Image (spheres, rainbow, N blue to C red):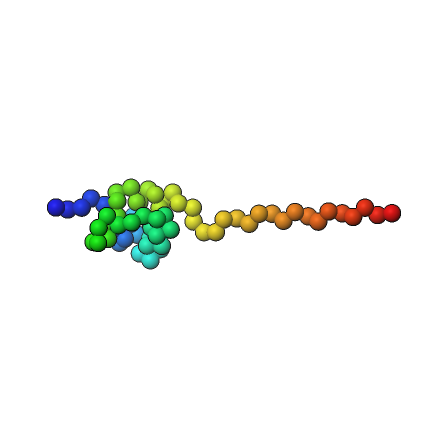
Length: 70
């Protein structure tokens, strides 16, 4: 019986990234392997391809309010 899914090596090759990066994205997306053989579900490729990468942008700082003078 052959499992349907992806290995980290296959995911990395499809996305053009390193295996380590693929592993980090899979972990960040909370995807668990189907079994101990580290085969991930068939929808894994789409889920990590659509995941946001990097840190979220910083919120712009509000300028300080001008004090009213005499």
